[in-house]
Image (tube, chains in turn cyan, blue):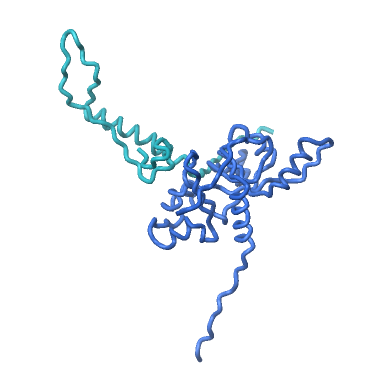
Length: 78
Length: 192
């Protein structure tokens, strides 16, 4: 995620953001009647959505380090 | 090789020079639009306090500790701290609609900036144990914040304090940049 060895969880320190989510779609199930397979199997579409959501979280953390402008609008009730 | 800035995590009750605070707001404008009031503010994820420490200490004594209260400061001068990577990308002020030129991470301009040889910028490379990424002060950007507002938000928004030696270095470079004199360019007369 972040390639700074000092603090891998600090997104701001990252010089490049790489998101890696293992693609588990198409895993051959090894479950038997007595031992159900607990592994989740995602379709490629679900994987894509998950990947996008993960990226959005990281991107939001990265963007949070930038100053922002906020406009508030209030009705005068005087 | 850049100098590593030392910080202190002890949050003093008063505002100190060199304090790094999170999510500090600066009121940009208040406009009446018909029956509405529009308030626009900038929210800076991090700022560093630039006001002289002796002034802050004196104000604290007179504002908080003594009676009758006679505060001496109207506001506190702070400079936004930008994430260095955002500055190099030139997109650190994109949300304020102020695109800036990128600084390629190779070349003399980049080297001068990180070595603090560019008068306009101060590069802060924090010690390895710090949670902070490398940050940059742009001495063209500074805002004032109400003393009471800053005092109220400090307990929750205090990040750390740059230690004395390093904050004096920032203060000196800021003062030098602010007091620079822009001399006119010499224009050679055109031959007749």
